[in-house]
Length: 232
Length: 251
Ligand SMILES: Nc1ncnc2c1ncn2[C@@H]1O[C@H](COP(=O)(O)OP(=O)(O)OP(=O)(O)O)[C@@H](O)[C@H]1O
Ligand SMILES: [Mg+2]
Image 1 (tube, each protein chain N blue to C red):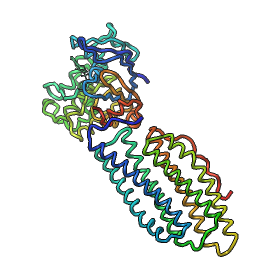
Image 2: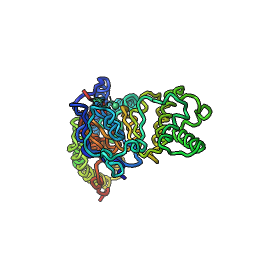
Image 3: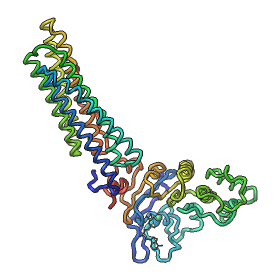
Image 4: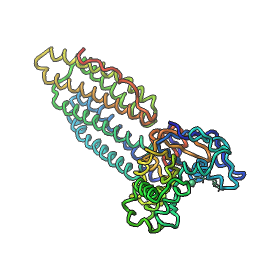
């Protein structure tokens, strides 16, 4: 159940709207960081890598801002029911988004350490994995914007796909490592990149759980979709 | 365990209906909070529970209210006995213009509950202790109750209400005239009292309802819109009207 009618106190209404906007803005910045980080990696674009690394500060700033707004709302407005859920989930979502930003930054840093061109196979599977994570992240932000528990549930249920792709990506990287001693450095970084993408998927799933709670007022029941074991 | 069970209670003042088909279960040894906008019928409902509406000529109450499985709206109900069992504390502290001691002794006296001065002294002391007022007034028991501070007067009224060991205590906005410290003392007291009494409190403070009660009922225009665990009402109410009210969205 959502509330359509505005608060009697207009400034309270504004504060909640503002919090909501900041989450969306932060989410969009994370989407962008993720998308660019993989392009940077496969194109060896060091300029863009530095840009991503710098822009992460912006994401961190949003996290701080949202935290302050949440503390103020709790202290000054004592939010209840839907407002309480808005406030508490904003805090949790912002911390997951911040982690996603960090992981994108980490991919950008690693892209600076990778030298030479990557095989077509590797690029293909990396792109497939990152596109999937991007799609999930975009959907979860949509679910937040639209207050849609069904989109959130869909994201939550689709995380398995990311785990499968991560495993494929790892397997491909292991093959790449086996091919040649000289691949050791690049290959090791790529293993971490795959792991980072998988972690981003997990944080996206956390956000989906928060959106579900925000809309429904109850927690998603049951275990998360099963994570298949690494390297199987 | 169920202490009070109201069934299809309708109340009107002359031609104006104030409560519509109220059905509610009040749990024993729990605190139930009644919330809702001004004029929605909270006090009217509370007054049904000790038949205080009887004194209002134009007030007509129908339906059934079972307390311990006895319908108190029945003609056979002894209203004096009923009010001994159902104590009430009002919004404005209203001690009698008598001494602190006499304020407490009044109830036990009219209900013939004590045999000797010693026994009465004991009741007075115990009631004041339960109301967390004893330490502040033990040396001035024979001064007038109206000379106490507002918060102390309210605790005196609570002591007076509990002196006759009522099973149920009704409180109508008991903290609205009190500062945060006195309010906290009353809230702490409510928490203690629920071990021996069943408490129903009307309050305009959402935070207070959330803090003190286990169950909450939301009234709107004479209807009980939603009743449930306080937890649920304040985190995730079922009804849109409830949510709009508690989040401050009422037009
Ligand atoms: N003695 C009375 N005579 C006539 N009408 C009354 C009387 N007492 C209450 N009413 C009417 O009954 C309705 C419910 O009043 P009630 O006092 O129960 O509301 P309430 O929820 O306690 O409001 P508040 O929060 O302002 O105390 C109101 O419309 C009120 O005008
Ligand atoms: Mg009232």
